[in-house]
Image (cartoon, rainbow, N blue to C red; front, side, top):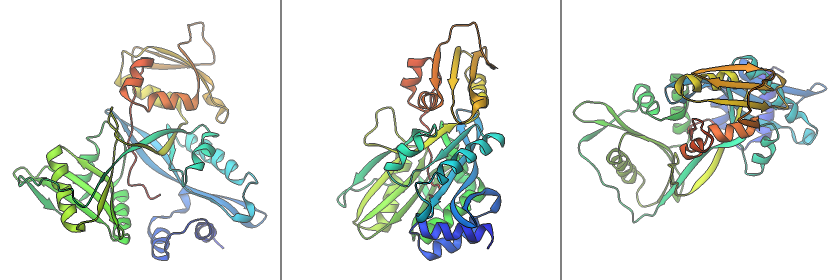
Length: 347
C-alpha cells in the first residue's frame, strides 16, 4: 500500500468524518509532501499532516506550519508513536524555516497533551448566541455578491493578527462548506464595490453556527447576519468571533508553538524598533533554540550567553503566551503582543 493509502486507513479509524468528505479530502487536498507517518513493523501506527500557512502580525507575514489529522491506530496508542511524530514534525518544520507551528486539539483533554511539546493556548474565539427572536438590521448600502478569493483576502488581511489563507485554501474552504450544506455570505459596498463582510456558516436541525465572520463595520456585520437569518429561519445562531480586549465568552480553540524564535523575534523587532529585551529561552525539544536573544534598535542577536542583564528567562511556551496575547499583556512585559485569529481550518 502507498503512504496515502496507509494514512487514509488511519484517518478512517481515528475520525468519524462522512465518506464523501474523506473522499474529497484524499482526492483534492491530501499530498504526500505534507504527510508524516510512523510504522510498527510494517503496519501504519500514527500519522499527521503539515500544511504551510502565513501568520500575519501587524504588517509582517511569517511562515507557519499547521499540524492536523493527528491520529494513532487503537492498538498502538500509549506507546509513544504520536509523541515521536510530533517531535519530528516540529524539527522538520523548523528546518523548513517556519517560525511557528499551530494545531487545533480534537478534544479538551488534548490541550494538556500538546502542552508537553511546548504548545500554548493562544487561539481563542469569543462565542455569542442569538435566539430565534433576535433580528438583525439590514443596511441597503451593501449588495450581496458571489464569494471570491480577492474579497476574502482583502478582509482577512485587515485583521491585526491572523492566519492567512491562500487561494487554494479558499477553494478548499468553499468545497468544505458545500459538503456541509453550509452558507457563505459575501457583501460589498454598493457604490464602490469594496469588500464589506464575508460570513461562513453551517446549519444543523437546531442551530446555525457561524465559524467566522470578516467585516469592516458593525453595519456590514449586521447586514450579513440579517441575510443569514433570512436563509436559516428561526433557529438559534451561534457566532464565533475573534476576541476583543473585553471578551464576552472566551474559549480556547487552538495552540501555537514557537519553533524559530530568531525569525519571529526578528520580524517583531523590525515592526517595533523601540522594543528592548534580553531573553534567555529554554526549549527541551529543539536544542538550537536554547540561547539568549538580544532585541535592540530593531534587530535581534542570538548568542549562547551574555553579560547583559536578562530581562526574561522563560521556556518557549511562556514566550508564546506573552507574544500571542492581549495588548494589555504585552504592555506588562514591554513586548509587542497579538491575540491572533485562526479560523476556517480543515480540522
